Amino acid sequence: MPCGKKRKKQKIKTHKRKKMRRKLRHLKKRAWG
Image 1: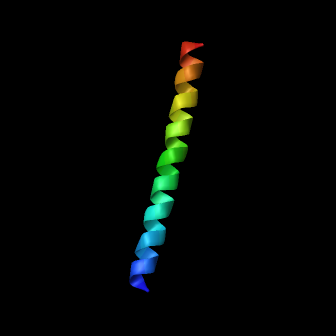
Image 2 (image 1 turned 120 degrees about the horizontal axis):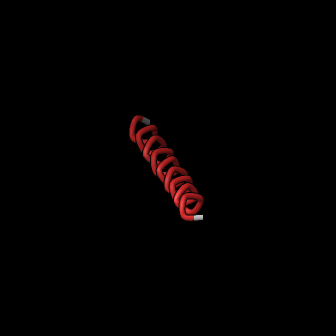
């Protein structure tokens, strides 16, 4: 069971990173605009 919990935590981490990346890209576009 602990292994499954660890896996779930990692998945959330990657998702958060993806979201942050998207936000950063949007901010960059605004700055350039």
